[in-house]
Image 1: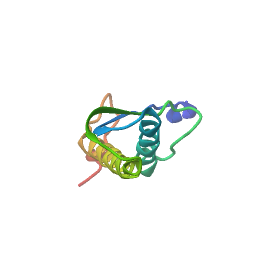
Image 2: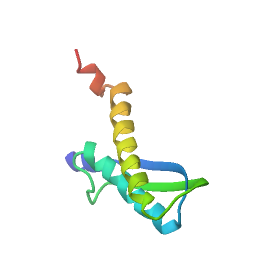
Image 3: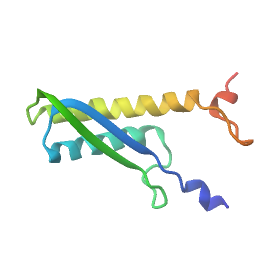
Image 4: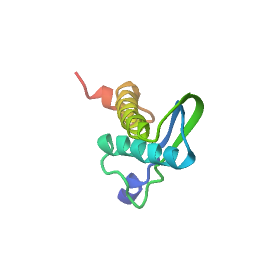
Length: 103
């Protein structure tokens, strides 16, 4: 069924050692989800279950304005991780992977 093609889920977890408040981690998770939208088309559909989480192990004190920097780095890291995963994937059960199309 064609509509099943849009039912895919990507789970994202980004971690930082910056000590951030829960509402700042929420903002970082939003930025991480932006990284997904840079490389997955279509993104943010009604049928997908895409979700991003941000966690902090602490250790480095962060100011409130550092959240934007952490978020931008999270978006870039997610973008690069998704692109790398597509490049490294191998086909299964007759479904070719992207690497099989590259000469």
